[in-house]
Image (cartoon, rainbow, N blue to C red; front, side):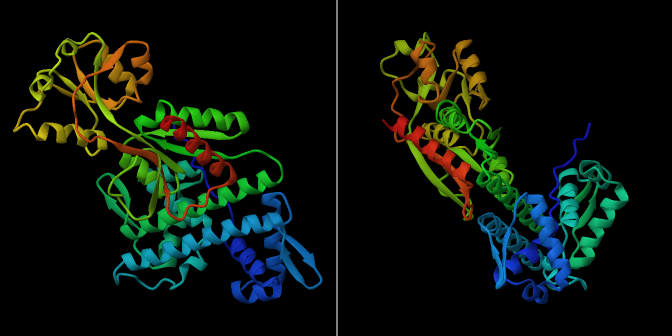
Length: 410
């Protein structure tokens, strides 16, 4: 069964009007910039106030001035509209002269329905399935999608043997739309918090090491203070998590930091440092060997992380020094539950953080071999978008993560 896609139903024209009224403290001045009548702008502000549930302006004889809620919302609206502006520019540049008629500044004319259709097609790869995701008719979805193409003068969709794919220009626009809609969601959350309602949502992308202590500790601490906050934890390969982060689908990543940083639109912050060890079941035959060599280690089957992870790099580098010596029976896995089960039921070895298996070591299930692996220290921390502005609850959670990291450092 196909689940309906979450849609952003803000009228972008209303948001543009709101921004101009706030900038000029005047409906008449705003009307000149957004090409709407004064009554239309008055109606737009009234509809926005109905959506957010509070007044956005203090209406005085000498002008319209944003309320506290209005200032909170304005910051998010400005960022959202700027994202759409940036996405339009990036899409135009990506077209490399292939733009047809369209409008030069189409970001001023695009609608939420058109951007929602773009995101649905990106997700579904098919017009009919995209319509089901949005819970609208296929003709309505198709019309919104093609209206967006005509508006921007760009080719956004291409047919493939698998269905419909977005062009490079369309992908750039879709990414900016996701970030814009994320800003508007955060704006609503901030207003609700200001009104005294503790609501909110934090989406965390997590890598293996963070799951054993730091992340559970921080989430439990958050729930103790903010029991009504929704926390969504997503596991997955780093590349998938990074994609979700950069597209506004994930708020922050927690796990091993990358060196060098893979792309310049993210920021990494260290929580603590960790070292790797070689682990096995507590009664493994190698614990009777007091002078372990790489040859001894290569004689046994291994469990290793997937390629392109810091821990796998350490494993590869360790055996790269051995002139071709390498274990022949290797399983790739990242699940701690699976790794523990494989270790306990066999003579397999694994390379892992001793912190990650601290509980298993404490109760005597696993032990770390005394083998010098050289310098294996790596930083564990958070990764966020470079220009991300967290909500109050997200900032609180970042602080709790740092406190959990400090406990590891002690």
